[in-house]
Length: 452
Image (cartoon, rainbow, N blue to C red; front, side, top):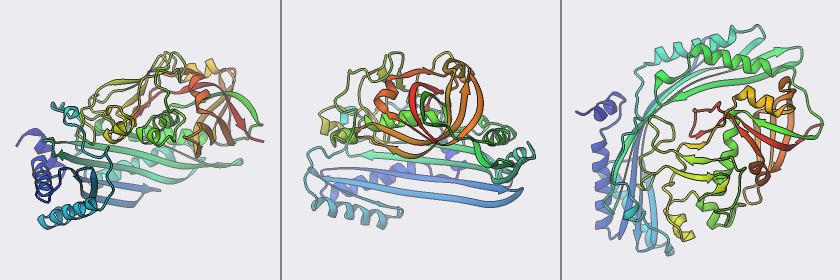
């Protein structure tokens, strides 16, 4: 048994070869049913999540999931079906269901698997599977430790939503009628804590978490608890601001949302529907000249890494924005055909989207802003992807002379994404690595703050 197979067994997953046999059987049955092309993906996942509240076990959840998705094509007619029954009869029924749907759907000349020449032929080991050898009792103890560190931090921490620890390992295999058949396993571990603080000014809640593919890379439980407590305490005595225009600094843990709106606007499905303010803007200055945004799909053990996308298309590092200029879109095979372009290997999303950091840390960005609003939480989602209009509830801290003065809440920040992107003054080097989007804090020249 090789190392990968041994890891799968250790995590309670089937061998990859077993799932590959299932996909091969699906594709063969689709061909025998008359399909001119087919593709299928199968996944298996196992894991757990435990939560402790006020020092006692609150929830223990175990999951063991599997799913099979099948898509068949009769010429340019497409039909899809899915099932959790991967027995021989379950596969036969699902293939038949997909074929029945395809026979009665309208033709779509853009439908079909990814073109063969775009498929991955070499498969890089990206070191993404690190099962965590921790049992439920040990995980509960870690969750209790995490919460206890927060509760003991300050007497104003009066209540808790709990400390949580989770671990999941999954295996996905994809194949199509062009001969592609491959997959990979990946793990995801996290720990978090959320607490409530209270004083004469009222009550506030906040949290902190750590996540990684490798359990040993998680922050120490006490550190997570302390950060949750510190963040919660810092929000006590929050005030409202009067309506004004001012510089805005998005902290690293919320700045990723700015890039999320950008990716949504350049996604193929938004573009061919003409539902994006980024339509026909390749080679146009979108961001400030110092901004570079790129994908890094082959970073070892990173949360957004992948050797190929959900259609088997090879992933490649590439720039989306260079010196502020839009270089291209985010496309799968279908949207690329609709737009008369080539897939960018983004079926399923982007991979380790990174905005290049600058030289300043979070404190340095506060000094650079001098006077303005540090945003640490965003609420609601009144963001219009068609027009680019932006308006969201926010909370954070008012800053003067580069120093935090007091917490603020019950405000709304508003602007237009075009202006926000062009007026990015700086990106911090305090890069948050806990998600697929990798960014530091982002300083914007000015936005409208609606308050009292």
